Length: 195
Image (tube, rainbow, N blue to C red; front, side, top):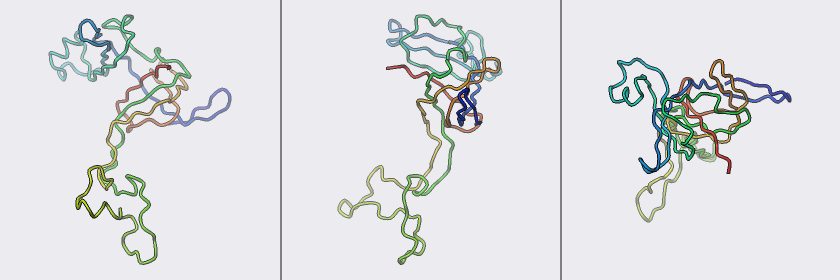
């Protein structure tokens, strides 16, 4: 993350994303597959790390990641076409999806925002405890009860993030705000269709 100043003098906390050019590996149509979608592949790797089926599917290119996105505009897309940062426009709002940072086993105060117990009035070691977890009648713990447990490491989408800058020389997109994931994580950037 970094700070970016716009021409009108506003400062934005921004995230720089390196968007390597992706290749269209398959175009799915309603006639053949029953729905409209485009599959893109990215991330160059060694040929020895890719099996023969993937290598043939990608027309001899050793690609690491494949992602399919449903779209109605498949007429202008051709297999082998390159998708790079030029498909985005400065000011456009995008949705960014990635796996969030794992935070390990956390208690209810951090994981769910519980307040905990009072610091005085007879409390000794129960400041951050969950308190009562259910009713007496059923004599069981209901499914979905918020408790301590593993936190983070989930697929998260942050929407409506505006693009501040596009740098085609280095294949970088500067997006306002924070995006999920650690440094170096694989993120998916999608344009939000206007409604």
